[in-house]
Amino acid sequence: MSTAPHQRIDDLVKQNKIIVFMKGNKLMPQCGFSNNVVQILNRLGVPYETVDVLADQEIRQGVKEYSNWPTIPQVYINGKFLGGSDILIEMYQKGELQEAVEVALAS
Figure 1 (cartoon, rainbow, N blue to C red):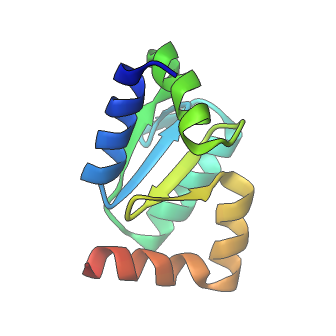
Figure 2 (tube, helix red, strand yellow):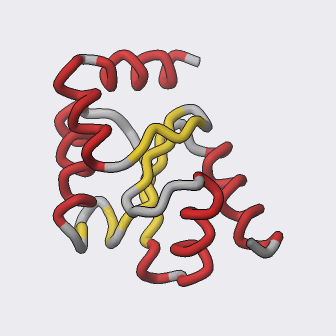
């Protein structure tokens, strides 16, 4: 990955307590998996930011290399990559996501 997209992704991850790289945005998800993530975070009622990977090919490819994870969406909390839709659903069902979000927002 070239330096510019990597640096932009790194800055976004570090500047936002909760950030989702997704297809579309929180107001208009463009795929079911991205919608799942938005619905979970909305249900938790926490502030989060989104980056529409469809609007920027460098970010779309770059985030996959940044995380070493092949799919979108990708969720980062407190600078740490958590995973995508399936992992978020599982963490939410176990109560682990709520805990991770509370810790991130308290720090």
